[in-house]
Image (cartoon, rainbow, N blue to C red; front, side, top):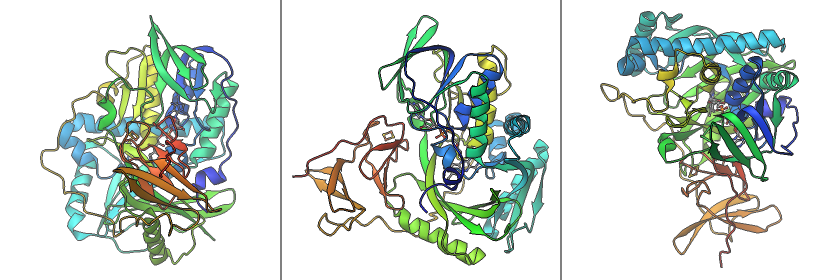
Length: 493
Ligand SMILES: Cc1cc2nc3c(=O)[nH]c(=O)nc-3n(C[C@H](O)[C@H](O)[C@H](O)COP(=O)(O)OP(=O)(O)OC[C@H]3O[C@@H](n4cnc5c(N)ncnc54)[C@H](O)[C@@H]3O)c2cc1C
Ligand code: FES
């Protein structure tokens, strides 16, 4: 089945569209984990808060994640020590552990039925050439007091060369958990508005006025953009983020297949975890991470992961498959805090580097502190305008993890039903979709955000933007921002 396991199995409460102008203390834009947790904490503090979502809650990357609640973000700590020194590297671990603890506490407090479980996470390699990196990482753990071990085997049944584990981490069902959090906050007065696209930002003294696509006004004292890519830009500063897509597949199994949550720093890389919700067992396998909209075949990428799942576990026929992207920063630390230094009371949580659950939870706590006028120890570390320190020596360049080919472009005449292709007319790239009835739809493949050329994702049937990750469905309808509008229809004749 195409689509995310989380969105297909989780329950999401429906909320109304904004129907009239509104005045609140804090407007939180975007109902993924970043926006929801920030809104939740602010409501607990007694603020009048409204949460706005352009589609449905938890529809974005949060509804499509692998949902490991972890401070082990690859072999990052050796790099952080090198870039920023021991204090900041330790603070990054501490911030993420605070974020994890906050989520575990919310789960307990709201009695959401153990949707968050404690888990040990493992990073491993089967490549002997990578062993020295793992040894350096465990040294970094020891220097920073991180609870973890160097291992030569893991709970997985295949041989590995090296691994590092991290204790006291977690896994969760993000849709079930966050739906519960929104419901609890709504009971305490949070206004929640779906299908409400927020745009524009005007400063009026010490207040801000945002607009909606339907022409309504949101007046507030503080704005928090939990929009994944910042929901408002005054220049191209956030162009520094780049979008990376990963594919995930979920298989139903008779029993739990393995303990722990795992990620292989191999070529190709692979991520693994199990799910035990609603009386059924599944496991998730993901990988084939690549630059969004790179023009290579996502259909083949799914096939490669299916082959791997068969080789490792003897399974065939995934129950769910989906792909999504996250926004990456150069130093692998998020951009969280003031959206622009000269714009008081406007905040962002972005650049979560595919490790956004613990990080955005830390960001939600930090922004709550800032709005409440309290200090927070992580402001400088996460500052979107921090000076990004380079690594002393170049890291090993990423080797191509893919054996997939470029998406084959065919002519409109030979295009099968329910298939897409790209053609050129007068030097312009045109997207073509032939629907199941044989009707052909033509659209301009310039992204409606800033005009980047869209790539065909033949695995999910979408048009994906390599610049900041906007996605459009087969007909050109925007399904993922920052783009606000659908693709332009064109007449190819
Ligand atoms: C394949 C994959 C696996 C991952 N696995 C993990 C993992 O195991 N652990 C981990 O910690 N992290 C993981 N991540 C990263 C993590 O899932 C993300 O960092 C996180 O979910 C991002 O949350 P968010 O709230 O910032 O964005 P989103 O969940 O995308 O939410 C943003 C919301 O804002 C809405 N929005 C945007 N613009 C507007 C607007 N103008 N008006 C109104 N609404 C708007 C969108 O519709 C969307 O619902 C993974 C990422 C990927 C790609
Ligand atoms: S998402 Fe920014 S140009 Fe496409």
